[in-house]
Amino acid sequence: MSRRCTRRKEEIESTPPAGYEKKFADFIKLCSDAKSEGATKVKVAYPWVLGDSYEEVMESLSRLADAGLLLEIAARRHWPSLN
Image (cartoon, rainbow, N blue to C red; front, side, top):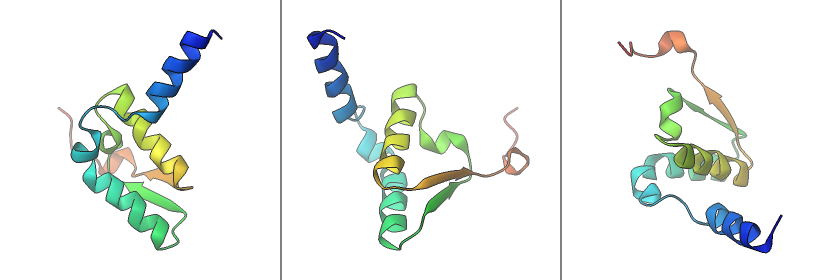
């Protein structure tokens, strides 16, 4: 991999999407609280809680991994209709 590609990859990995901290403050707090309480996983009601874009979802998954937490998503039958 070229030096230019590596530098860009590092910038992407270390910089959350614009507005992420504000938009996902509740998710960030959920992860922080779970970790401080000694939990090993978090459960979310819907997959879209993790983000609206690829970058947001990757940031959310990275934060879970950094906290050492597993992710559980509620079964689809419990989701509200998307129609």
